[in-house]
Image 1 (cartoon, helix red, strand yellow):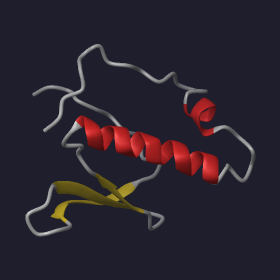
Image 2 (cartoon, one colour):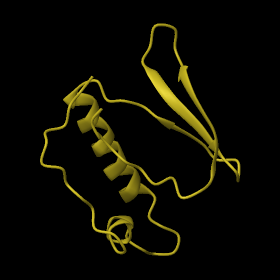
Image 3 (tube, one colour):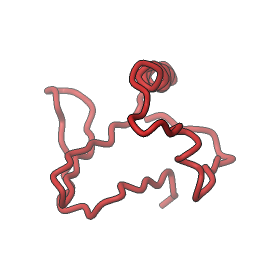
Image 4 (tube, helix red, strand yellow):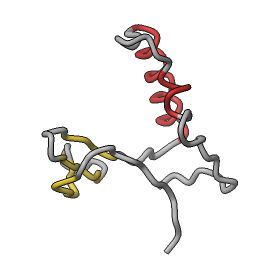
Length: 92
């Protein structure tokens, strides 16, 4: 086994399931939390998908700024620095 990634959801997870949204599509992990949030972990299959979602996140952040005026990127690494692994990103 090897450690690939870790993610802090921020809430108590009550359910975790594997699912396929489209017949013949990529398998993903869907979770739900105690407060009713439903989330999904979707693996990136190519560097192009990663690039697309990074640009989408950037444009969404510029289009809809935070209601409280805080910068999301600086808040994300305020209490715990963002760690960069030395191993290259692997695609499935």
